[in-house]
Image (cartoon, rainbow, N blue to C red; front, side, top):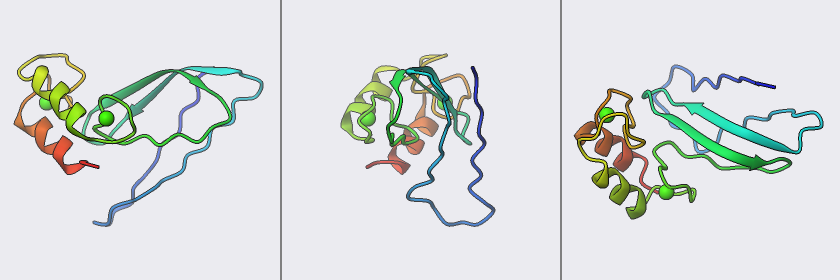
Length: 108
Ligand SMILES: [Ca+2]
Ligand SMILES: [Ca+2]
């Protein structure tokens, strides 16, 4: 079963602290994969998720946590210049200063 929900942040300049999205999973006991496509182009994948829980998912959180901190920064720096890497937060094919700026913008 695949379920898709689009979350719109609206047209304003404000930021959101939380944006709850609820999925009904019928009798499923687990979720194989959650894929989040962020507006910047970053595709975040979370695997093997339990049901009946509230998760906090933060853009640019590369390591889980859910916080964006020095561990995420170290991962990004480790992948610096790489193509097709997890830390390619804007999806342009390379990990560079643009991705670093996105990460710093979401610093916890
Ligand atoms: Ca993290
Ligand atoms: Ca990039």
